[in-house]
Length: 437
DNA sequence: TCTGGGGTCCTAGGACCC
DNA sequence: TCTGGGGTCCTAGGACCC
Image (cartoon, rainbow, N blue to C red; front, side):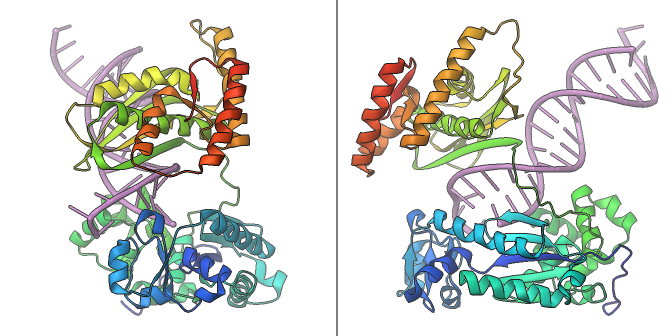
């Protein structure tokens, strides 16, 4: 049984998965040659390891551990703050390289991509393996970072391949060899199978990916829901997840959360955090031309339990001025005095295009138009002078707290924004808005 | 992993209707 | 008022990903 190949029924696809090695740390080493060969970690600003170079990993530093522990494990470790702008540039260039080989490139995350190579052997006059090796070499030559690649019949199998040999690995999994790669892979390592499902599968006596793949369809349908039935198919070499090349242009929901330590019982402070979340979420929604039908407000208690409430909106909107009342209402229903909270969050959901908004009989068109103008100006100001040049009064207590805590900012830049923002604000006579201090 | 922030999709079960 | 069957819509919450 162990040595029996998996029977393939589908038309052979060639899907490549690329995963950059220790991406953030590698980018740093690529820009700063003096860091090459040294243990480097990023995430300094958060106090935890966001990414560790292979040199750091070799010394026992793992992701998500505290900076203090990392220093203890390896005193010579070089800790850097995460520089997302730079990593994004590397990311963009990496995807550009991939598109030279195939138009079907899915930008799965900042450091991962799927590429559909099906049919490209003829075009490039070489095997998929050589094609993948060329991609790998090009990325390393042009960007100075290494990537690991897997190529197989489905996305899930390509993922198995890219993880199989890291860093700088290249693993091709043809249909006849699938069983060799799944035999030693425990189910919780499969993309899409988390701790819950793997515990459930273990209970059914399934420990390895191969044991799972070998189950018959009736068994899988009987015990598991659709997403896992699909994974089962993918493991058997049946491609069910397409490679989607279209970039993400819209959202189902937009959320903003913020953790603060220590947890707070201060109602004004907690509500101010929430207001800021709401403003940020609205800014993003407007940037994508979206309006929300639903607003979800939630708080996380000190013990990590969440309490939330969902509010239906009388009309779709992405304007804080319209959302503060619902926000307040929701907040009042879930906030309990004396309970310490560590996080606030806001979700704008049931998003739809903001134009063609249906106006009900109760809407006041003049009022709506006025608000649209105000926020258009706010967005313009923010684009020019930086985010939060203009802020709602309700969000101010977070700023006061920050100053109180001694948080530093670029005072000069802030002053400029303040004055320019204020002049404009006065000229326009913005009503419920306050310029940030 | 004792816990950061941002997402997606699926399902069960209740409400309501005929 | 009860019983039975069947459909749709919505919501809460689960599970997973990077």
